Length: 217
Image (cartoon, rainbow, N blue to C red; front, side, top):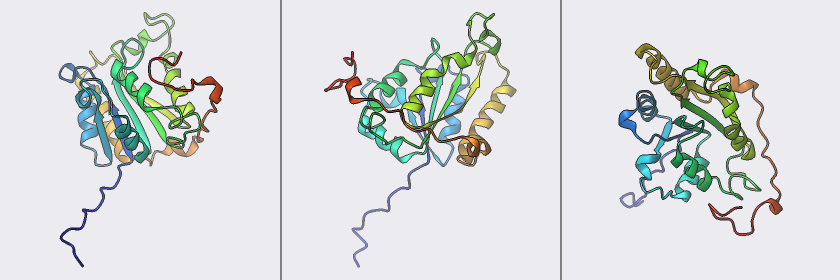
């Protein structure tokens, strides 16, 4: 048997794919620590969006292959203007395509989506009497519905509020919790009580015949 020219064994797919988006890691106090924890977790594949795509030219087949291999998809980012950073929004627009992620496509059905985010404002600012005027949960429907449209479960988010000013001990605790959750997935007790999410049906008549990002409507 000729073993000299045998292809190397395939690398097993990792069950967790972390899509990390921060425009300036050097200035990050909490997200940088979370990124380092993800990189150190054996079961986790990490995409540092701003490092991988500095020209904003996303390699869609590469990203779709990573998503297909994973069971848990993590969106890791600071909350900016009540939403995700611009490059992560572009990633969602270009990678989660009609016919693949939803609208007849079932590539993500049965997977889990987990938001891990930080806010600049303290938790008390996300209140009807606070300067952000709404509880933080009011800003989650775009994430929840993205998961639902693709047939994914939206897991309870892990959010650290007031990331600029929390003390070092709280940051350490938060990072340790994140690392433990990554390493222990899917052995999370609460997952047993969460039902799977059937993908929402999108009629073909609701989509353009030739869809490209930017000119859908």
